[in-house]
Image 1 (cartoon, helix red, strand yellow):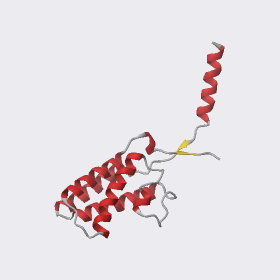
Image 2: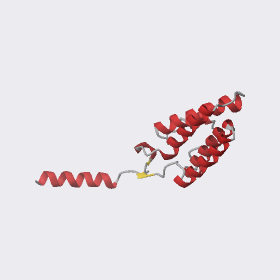
Image 3: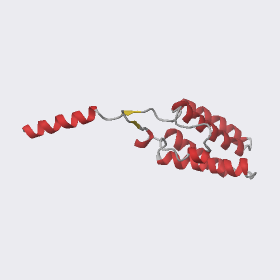
Image 4: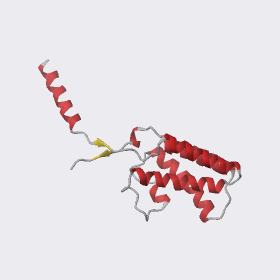
Length: 141
């Protein structure tokens, strides 16, 4: 019994010293839903490339807003997609969106409705990712 109590105290002491959670990089649900409605309207007009590009730009803006020091201005979307602050699912989602934007914006290729649908799904994954790794821990010094 004395051993059990001692172990409980030890675990509690470790919990008190655990790193503090850092806010996630995601937009608010309301903001994400407004963006989805906006890009849906663009896609309905056949502006798939513009809709996907908007998803990318807003994703970057949301990361910068919520984690101001995490994304230096000189990073490319490829580099941003590898940031450790993003969960693995969000990294994959971001890579998918940025690859389509590169193909369209820099490669001059049109994007299809399917490209938009895949990018929209990727953004939804990014914006609403609830995985444990979406919230990072800050190390205490």
